[in-house]
Image (cartoon, rainbow, N blue to C red; front, side, top):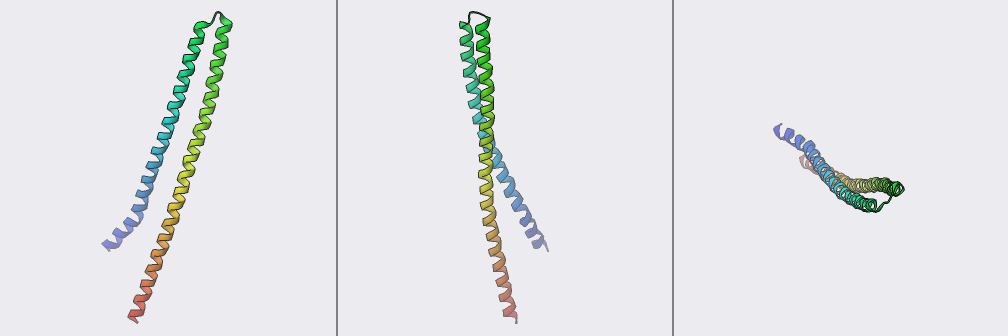
Length: 132
């Protein structure tokens, strides 16, 4: 009985542990991708800010300041939209890759389980023949 309970526990625990590990690695990958893209975005914004400040020093009136401000705001909005689109594409790609990997793993596990069941059936049939 203890062996059967232990086998049952392993039957359910191992797949959950594998799933937890897989989810951890996916989350780590998503965090790395997000961090890299966010750093790129922040560097781009810093460069834009420096450029705007340099241009503000050269302004000789309210019209010049408003022009620099308008260009700066337009650039920030455009970059934010592009960044959002880039992040969505990256996350989608990671999700697709992980979905494909999970599909492969599931196919392999299913084939392995079928082979095990077939082997168990043939062993049971052989035992019945030997007993008869």
